[in-house]
Image 1 (tube, rainbow, N blue to C red):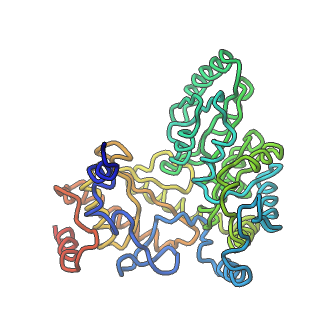
Image 2: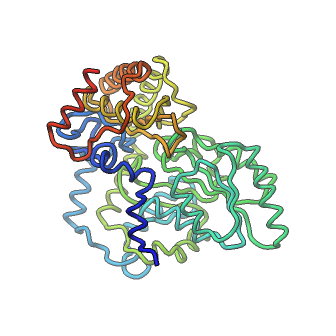
Image 3: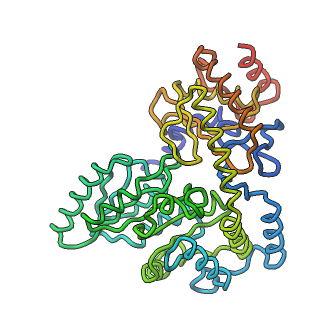
Length: 433
């Protein structure tokens, strides 16, 4: 008989295999200080482009005040228990009602977490005879939700409406053959890696030809898109055609939790059948009260979204003017596409952080194909013009080094919990190359 632990330590996985060099620096880094556009990383001031703090609410004084007051009044334990049993409150129901109204839906249900929430939603509404058709670049939480589904699922090429129709044809034929089940289409309002919006309007229009329901995960669109900030459905003028609208509080609201909005009769079904909520403690009262305040600010302070878009446009325009490829983003999410291996990417990240004071997340193989590098920048309302200019200069300088082969190293730099001498040696080596 094999020992499960023995198998695990023999293969830590594609990312875990680098842990001894990466932990604490490239993976699991620690940003310290008040949440802002500038924080500290290993004792140094850095401009941070890795926080989903779109509207700058994370450390807003009004938010800090309401969070503190609610915690002082209720503590972090109240209400105790799952909502169905003993964890409900007027404030929980008020937040649901306000979210439903904001998204122009009949009802909404609070969820403890975004990742858990979308998985549980898929599990709650789809049976073994139902068919799910989903975008190829759906977030990992959707993919994990699909793993719970015991029925058929068909994937269509990213934002490819023609291929979506082919998969809907397949799904429709199978439904007719088995004489049971329905079709759920899943896409995103904004795809978090590339920043492009899902083609919601075109998908909604397909309802004239096909019989399906539409679930949209709008984690990055909620608060950033649309005239009022209601998201990608509002932006594309097709909110009514979205049957179930999902988003998280972790992005624009800079908080914890999520919600699902839709027809009252369906939301009520989910409320009584979603296992992850029925068997889990409800959101603590300070979180709920804090989210009520965040939603109020999102609705009544359009200047927050305007500042976000000022910064996003300035950053994206500056990158394009300097010759960078940022793909087809039409949201604040700003990918920067480059060529290079994992070793080059890590050497460049280290140079960017240590010598230019810029902290940005990077994506490499196996998440994307070998030989490619993606920087993923998240502008927020908290960033300044100075932050943007300094970052543009840093990107130009490091890209020049990348193209010149300065970052060609044989292995990932060893930055995991290293002693000061070794740390400084590596930094100086990159700086002086």
